Image 1: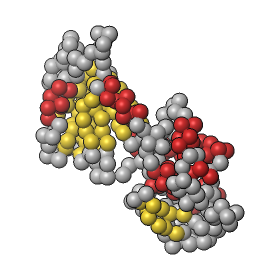
Image 2 (image 1 turned 120 degrees about the vertical axis):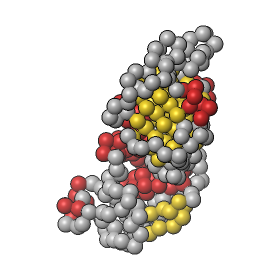
Image 3 (image 1 turned 180 degrees about the horizontal axis):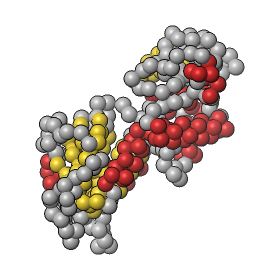
Length: 298
């Protein structure tokens, strides 16, 4: 499942390609056809992300609030395990949602016509999502309300996550994967941030000190912002990069240089101890038992 940096990158890409433009919207697969018909010929106003949830905001749908002003209609997307967004591909029957800048559709509410045919870089296809639904402003706020703070969202408060972590007996590695506690962190970031701060993944949340949590939050924000820029997850410090250590680069379909993720049985890049793995929170957890000792061993 894509982690939060991927979704924030998609939101940025959508804003750069479509924001403020009239769009053609369709559903070649047919499962989103009714909503696509409402969206076709409207303006894609903006794109937003929270954790692993992507929101595409449209104007011109005729949605109005209690005060009479026009409201944004949102396409709420969650990619799940197999969902994928591609740009500038060829449409096929598996496409749930297709957005094209330009085209021949007429706009709504005085927006006029959608303009000329789409040019390079102006098509988006969504395939295989776990969720793709047209929602209102109020329904969007409800999605945000059930998610924890996101290290990539300006103004999100780490205090809110720590309030739940500090009261919990659940292992901190499981809490980091709970999107109600912390939004956007997936299996790679949880394993790597715990390693980088020497935290035993089985430590109960209530035993995680506030200073350590603040350092982990700041580290996640830095690592995930880097992921937005590069499109990959890199977590190793300069002294542990392949060139510095004289080792070959990591080869994995997820890409990026990491300390423990998917390195079961390989020597830890810091101490040489074989990396361990166990299932936790329905995903494989990876950690170094030497660099991340239990609290009693400390």
